[in-house]
Length: 148
Image (cartoon, rainbow, N blue to C red):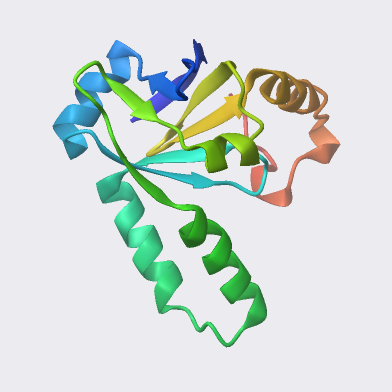
């Protein structure tokens, strides 16, 4: 559904203008109802509401008696914020989430199928350089024999 990487800017209020090529899909799929949450890699995840709902439900059905599960619930669901695209196609990224992902002005919106990742541009470049250094022997066993 969503793919590609786009360089964008946050405005002075922390709003992100969703590119037109995604905006229409998001309006059709979820009426602009989105969820932003933190990711362990230091970026933010931006889900259409219908894509986030089953993830949240599945997480919350797991036993909170397991400390690792409880930590994951606390991290993902605890950081989750409902956001709505405004009439200009912008979403507000809260100060808390901007601080977590070290987002300042220049950001990268990266399509990941059913969601987006939102990266600080410098952190994205560092991540990109690490990926470029992958050698065939560094790939997980699940990707053995995988070709493009």
